[in-house]
Image (tube, rainbow over the protein chains, first blue to last red):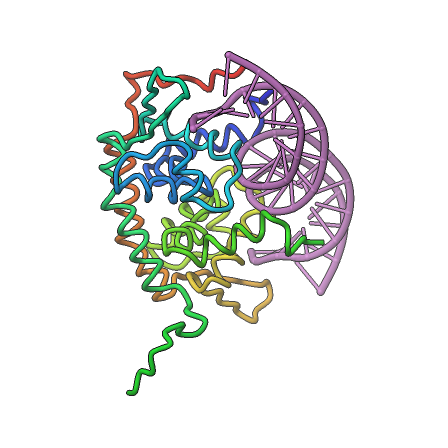
Length: 126
Length: 126
DNA sequence: CAGCATCCTTCCTGATACTG
DNA sequence: CAGTATCAGGAAGGATGCTG
């Protein structure tokens, strides 16, 4: 039972309506969503492949985030009527339209995050 | 009392270490952070101005998010030793380096979010 | 295989009152 | 003015067992 008129929800909706930034972040804001999108950029994957590729995510959460991505129109869910069941996930056109944005976000992070220590084992003489 | 080795925290740290995407999102992921950064792009603002400019945020949360932005190096906090007190917040170089990224995120959202005429499902949850 | 259902924990956010 | 303290609620994420 969700409280649809909690201040929290109201604030959320308002922000999302306000600017595109909040809307975009609400789509990729889930903890695992970037990872999922990232994997799917290389092509469609089935559920078990995703689960294996994204280490640490529980089934419940993975399914939840997939469902959200689906209802937000970023991915599509393809069910094969077979036994045993087989489901594949694929980016939609909208999903692929995020590629440049994801790349941008990733690049910024890679460029600006504090690197604790260069993990490069190669001796860089300078 | 924080659980530093909960699965939750471990996953968070791991993701942040993994790719730049998660790191970037952890910086701007707070609900109000994009708004704060957005306002500060126009120049430094003092606390009360921010509070007024960002409607709906409570003092506690505003301060928390400001502190996080500060410790992440995106903004700097300038205290004037006066009576009455006076504090201003300003983007750092790192903060300003996000401008293009924020614009990109905002643009994507503005371009792709469902329009009013297409009434989006109003959180059907029963 | 691809998931649901259930229960639980943690984290995030907020309201309100008070202070240097 | 610019916060802090306290109390609270809800949302997100997680562990585990079970099913078509």
